[in-house]
Length: 169
Image (cartoon, rainbow, N blue to C red; front, side, top):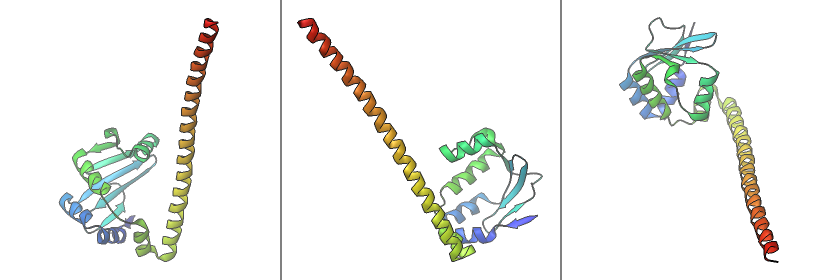
């Protein structure tokens, strides 16, 4: 099995010259990804990329489990325990990939056409709206906690004032 990602890479490279420069400086990179029962290899160069069966001698191997996915998605970090092999090449590749400045809708449009780009844009805007609602609810709950803490402080001050009033009488 070999799935060519070259059209995707070509479209991304047309929109981000810094990525091509970074991939040229990195050279050919072969790595494996193990995600539970699924294992596959990825080969990336400055001109082509593909998904293949796992490499026998990869530059590095990324082991993905539930905790790793949570760490990557929530904190945008990788744990060193997730990677086996050449950590320097892995960190160099991740450094290059994190600097990618490409509009995904344009890439999807170039490869799959107008309808796919419209669907993608619709999903992204719906997700952003849902995320904004969650943030608003989190902000509201934060303000509620602050208001409740302030109410407790006011009650304590009132109690002290009432206690003093009774002590003076």
